Length: 121
DNA sequence: CATCTGACGACCG
DNA sequence: GCGGTCGCCAGAT
Image (cartoon, rainbow, N blue to C red):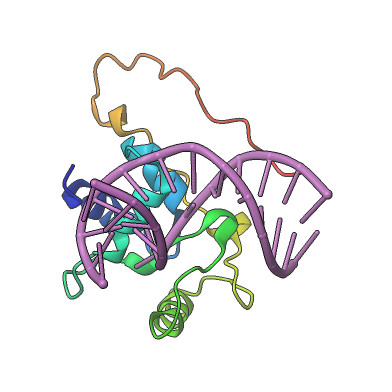
């Protein structure tokens, strides 16, 4: 698969929100899982307006190493994303990925609620 | 062709 | 919370 779809997806991450590599992989059904997402992001073309900094590790961990690590932190801060030393506050900024098929007006009498029942303690 | 190496993540101690 | 193992997969050596 071309990373194209991945980059497009990343671009629709709203400002002030973040996604994890795993989320990305699951949302796009990337073969190989999160690692594939990581590889895609590592190859993300710079200067294309791709908010790569909004993709973080599981649980909001910042995995990128210098020199980009600091850049990412800076970018995240510029979006006023709450973060600790190496962790983004997912409670506040984890993007609730919208169901892609919501765009179709018909057929969606009632989108089956499939909200993952994950919730903190 | 054999290995190593990650912008990963779930698990376990 | 931290570090090690294992599954995963494409490039680089």
